[in-house]
Length: 188
Image (cartoon, rainbow, N blue to C red):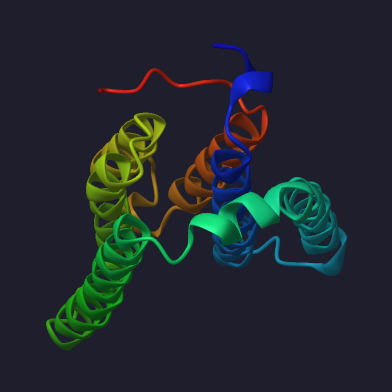
């Protein structure tokens, strides 16, 4: 199977994911810049420009293939997939809010970012199966490993910006990979 033989709906779906990854990757990188003390315009503007370029490229691919995605949107399988996707994301955000508040109330605010990274990483695992896209397993596992390891490998512990930088890089690399439209073997 070549990238040319990928269904247009799959191309559009991957492009949507890449747009989210472009945005959230930039957010992680900007948070890292702010935590490092390098949150100046000279540093943040290039991050934003790269995010815009990645987003625009993903949007271009999406627009070229959106009609195929729209054609299958009303199917029972797509409605089920959309419902599960929304549930997974809602649970992710609820857990982020709850755990962040608990950590803050326990005076462990330094651990909020690693905790968020673990939750984000975990949310990729069911999405990998839902979209039959095994690279999400790698993205999720990498997020979890970064969150578990960086606080103990950096001098600033959980307050080190390196975790945010790595999270942003992982999302941008995942977006770029998805946009290559490389076929991924299906489990079926």
